[in-house]
Image (cartoon, rainbow, N blue to C red; front, side, top):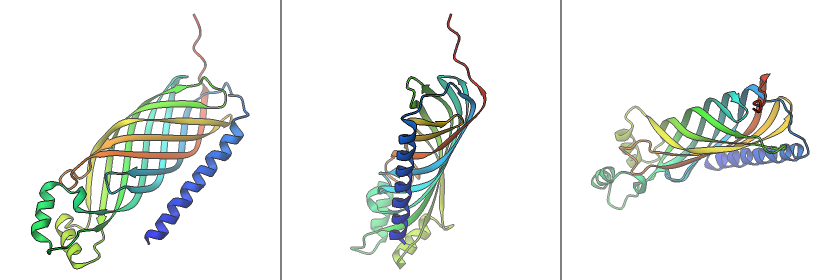
Length: 239
């Protein structure tokens, strides 16, 4: 199962890179259209990496919907969901949990509890847009997000089963927590109502703070098509 998941991740990343390269080669030779749609919708492939959770890497889906206030500012809603697998080990546990495990686990036993993890991200806010170049539109934004995590342990021995029963008596654990950071990216025009968007976000967060000792940054990569529609947003008139 781990090998098959790794293969899926590698395939997804390869497709995303190929998609971005193909769109970039198409877009480089095109001039920027004067049309800037009032509304935009983006959907794409996402990859979320959290080094502090034993370097868990998750793949999933990313959705954005926005309104263009003017040619340098937009605001909207951002959602993504990703799934992956990691392991709970004493190295990432709180000191209190490490002491509890040391008292309960058999001598010489090394805890390594497999856990499936699903993370959803919810963000709303604005972003700055830079339209200086014909072949690409750049954007940057703050990240103030709410994360929801669901962890489902999959014990593989009797000791793991006892630990999982203590930590997740319902068979799973959930938590809501905040994240803050920054993000941005670039969009290449393909045609009037279609662009190819590549973006990156970094947000500091700390899930399951009674179990996990430290918070840390999560890094989300995303690539996919962006659709623009609605009335054209004109340039501001010069005085």
